[in-house]
Amino acid sequence: MYICRNCGQRYMTDEAVMCVNCQAPKGMGNQFCPCCGSQVMPSVRICQNCGVDVVDYGYGTSNKSKVAAGVLGIFLGCYGVHNFYLGYMKKGFIQLGCILGSIAFMFVISIVMSIAEASYNEGATISAIILSLADIALILGIRIWAFVEGIMILCGKINRDGKGMLLRS
Ligand SMILES: [Zn+2]
Ligand SMILES: [Zn+2]
Image (cartoon, rainbow, N blue to C red; front, side):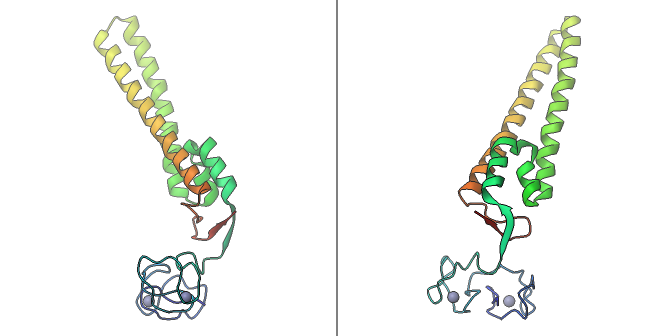
């Protein structure tokens, strides 16, 4: 059983992903407990009446492991591996695309730089150095982003898979 957190209407089936009464997607809203339907304060996480976690209730457990996802994020995260594993395909492709793009770009810059040096073109050499530094910063940024996601998964700040199910610990 699931009760709309926005309007308090009971869902006809657990599989419903949207409230047919108020059109709010499942999980949206903060007025009602999804388990017992009593009114809760918007900031409250645990229902005073029935004791469930009002945010996590009713989502089921994913077959994806929190530890596996977190470790993947920390070590291979810049390739988006943890996001592919969890089913966040879009985010995974952004990370993979950015990292492969910046590696390819670095390769191009190194060719340009060697040509510029060979022809004693100082301006071009300096531009190439600046571009490669920017590229290194981008790679570092993606690595930090993925690392932070890995940590957030391990400490439960990210606790859902791409379908919204709770990760198993
Ligand atoms: Zn509703
Ligand atoms: Zn309740």
